Image (cartoon, rainbow, N blue to C red; front, side):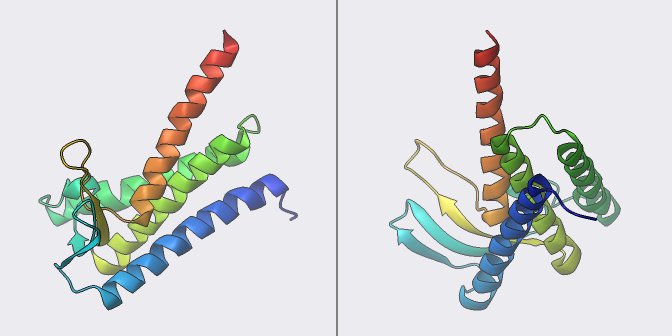
Length: 164
């Protein structure tokens, strides 16, 4: 079976996203003391090493094991599989949307992998712009998913604007 350029693009973005996330987490686990906080750019951008048993911002970490497996492993795998199937079949998606969806899938797979292998996800970056903007502690996979979502929102506004 010969893969199309489009399929190669999708798979490449997914693999690169997973690789960047996993390499960064391996480095943090090996080099950053668990529970520590180091300044990268003052208190505005800091490096941590925390294990998150939940999802985004720790949500779901207090669920019982069965619910956590269903909501944080099984359901995301099903959703990611449907999104991947959709982008492989929908030939009308532009490259920016394909990149966004592929980044979301790669980030999702990377975090699901961590939950499966380690029972938690390693988070390490935190941004605090003094009350103007503040994040929870996050990782490369989270950044990929968030960036993908932002790109999709922008792309949808651009499409609506061009239709009018």
